[in-house]
Length: 137
Image 1: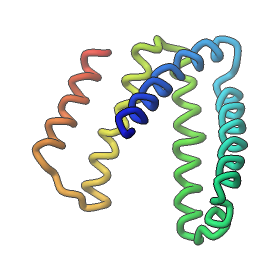
Image 2: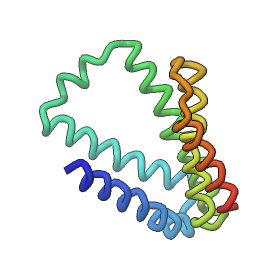
Image 3: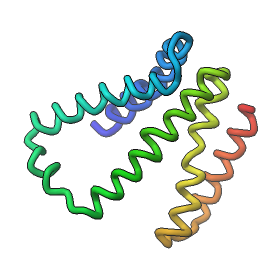
Image 4: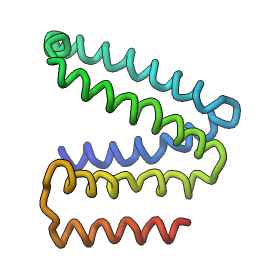
């Protein structure tokens, strides 16, 4: 089941930039982010309440709400806007892999902020990401 879910995730995330690139030919990036985020918000609210998670949504504490708010501004607004602007201006086959290098930032911040350990597999994986970005550019 996990393999199926991961395959579906890869297919959906892989196909989405193609749709976005086509749409951005006629739409301003900020307008595109607004449309996408509105649809996502409506869909998430429906799924949350249909699955009975509405009470859990309403009981998130202040710290959790603040962290998710900052995360939403960073990823849902600023990163999506900059990504859409780059996607509109550049080749999808170059923009998407380079934008997808965010695990490098996560790996560094997880060591610095969360005090996660540095292991050989993580260093090798990070090096492979950098090599992949170099090949794409």
